[in-house]
Length: 376
Image 1 (cartoon, rainbow, N blue to C red):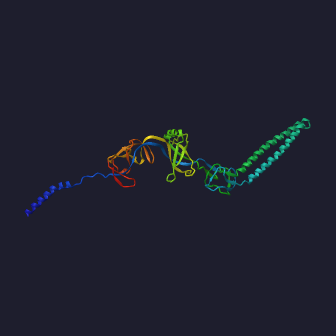
Image 2: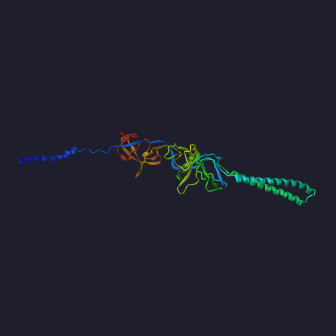
Image 3: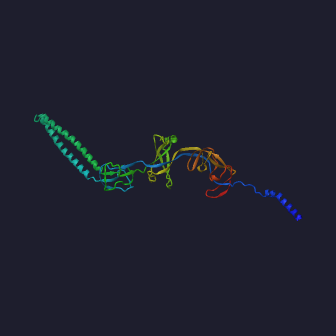
């Protein structure tokens, strides 16, 4: 028994002495993190447009509330709700019979007084010869001439009454004061309307041309004034979520004061809007074009990220590693960012996959919509 235990004990001691060495040789080497798959874009130097993106709303250049100038029964509407009407087109008819009767009465009174005037003038001519021959007194002649003057004044008043009665008859036909598109008809045929009622019969909005109103920061006012000096500033609007192409117009109005509550200034741009894609009350995305700046550093807008130390980009170096670089952005839109400092042009920057990139770590550039293709 003692003879068997000694070899076994020696074997166990040898195994214990050689165990760590064996484990050390078999341990695998530590591996770094895998390359991060990213999309990239190029930083370039080029002429960059100075654009200002804001939200605006569409408003009619002219919005007219059509009201009746006289009272009466509405006998006919000559259009359908929502129709486009032309200036001068007949819109409504009001029962004109009582106003036509008043006109005939005024015309008859005028004709009567004109006849009396002719008689008085004839008497005055005859009395002028008689008074010279002392057949009538001077007082009688003066009375005749006074009658002539009174009839002339009365006729002037009659003519004014006739003109007013004709206006009343004309007001029974209501025409469109401007060209535009009609809204809802507030009073239906057969109802009585009142003169200058608070509720309009219909509202007409001029839809072409049309305004887009928007506000810009007061700090942009010098650029607006400088850009508008040579030619009207161009404005491009797009309808959010719509498939309609962008609409182009020009700035035609700059407000004469800055809103102290918001530190903004109101601008309006005019659009031809022949296809009526822009509708009053609609909100739109507005891009105000202030001009161009040559030789600016421009990076893809998706490359710029925000961190605790400010805005930064990941620059892909020739050895396939990523360098985190702080940048100062002058302005940006949905596509491009104009860089004041941090980039010089010609760099390759990460535009997608930032969450998996670490400073100094390796990246693998993939094609848009595909998997990783290999490290560069």
